[in-house]
View 1 (cartoon, rainbow, N blue to C red):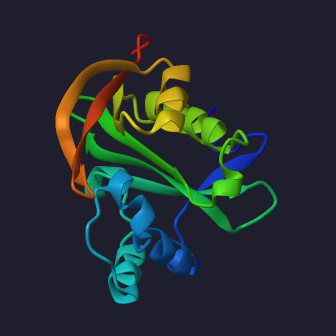
View 2 (view 1 turned 30 degrees about the horizontal axis):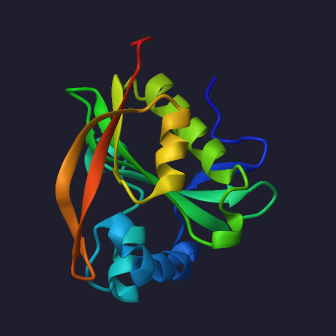
Length: 177
């Protein structure tokens, strides 16, 4: 049986109470590069998004979960399955631990482990993929620790502050599917 609860954290569906947290994340320019965002979002748009968060992954083609420390309700990060493709049994993965003090504490590792288990066991996916900037050392290490393989590099893929950066495509194949 898959559970979305680990030793340090649990993953839960987004709730209307997450409005301010999601608003802060979506409007934090320092992380736009990892979310492929280039414009701010209004509270109105985020409220609409949260109102539609009840759609299941088959309808929305995305699943965004809040990362919460055990025994709390407050979100400290988000983890996503996106570009969900049930016919080809694959999805993309994204993760963000918002507060820098929460990073490198095992929270991201446990969140990714829980999401991989869920994707392979509950959704019957054959593969997961992640797009990671080659400058994002913590994410490169995190995904490599779970067996994600670098299968290619997209040269000059992202443009920030007048400079182009490469992005790698990582893939994890579920050999049990």
